[in-house]
Length: 396
Image (cartoon, rainbow, N blue to C red):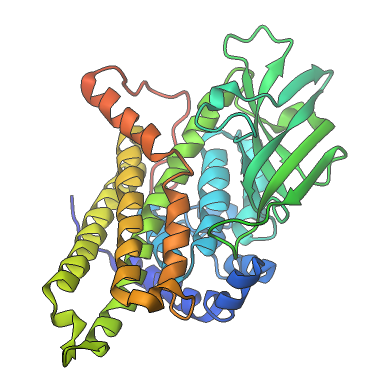
């Protein structure tokens, strides 16, 4: 494996970094304080091509490889987690799952607008009573002629108020399918759909999060991804893609912590010398560097596996688990280095601390990934071939 970034990787990193600095950071502290998202940021991300990073060029996407997507996620989260969340939901959970499970007709119908940012995609799996135990979801889809009638709700949905369409996983009602789940692409303009925002979040305050509801919502049968019974496999495939973007984004938080701590440690003096000279501060800086370097290697490996079209559930779980914990640890240390200032939003490290805590929970909790890795090692779990694989890169 060649660990050297290609010129294309370097170019896309620089472009994503510049976008984060010029389009995300200005006014961010005020938006974070107010708990307000900026929908204009979505439009700018679309216009810059970031919403179609790893969508094939034939659908209007950038056609870049999956490592490039990870790099963009890293740099966006270096600016703010809210920006990376957009990529996780739109690119990872929605577009990449559509690339994997959608028919040619479905891909042609939806991917061009999604890649161009003319439409934004969301994802609906979690429910008020079904999180880590997603198999117990209650939202139902009942066949009625050439439509399915959806009833239920989803919660903790990113872009709940902005996404034009959602990939929604349901339980099939009155079905003979062996696995009683199905996945649909649903449009928010369909009668019976509604949403409302969630407020009072600890972190990712500049991002939109909410609930979505379905009340006798009629969805055409040709909006189903896969077939009846494929819904849970579609959902788990989507999580592989979403977890990859979360894992790569976590490295961006670590880098942001270093960006904040290095100048502070060199400028802040205690006892007549910079605190950066203190061994315990150096220990914390070194720990962040370790987390960044290990984290990049882990997500680069998963990106390489995606490029090859290889199954990567185990490796993606490892990257998400390790990187998110390293990001939270780095943010905790960054607050410590800043002392009392770290407890104030005068410096960005308190935001990194709040934002990084969420990633330890979503896309699979710390506990879920601990169990996954143990079960793989003990031989209790293995990855079976999936019905449809994500297309490898370069795309054809």
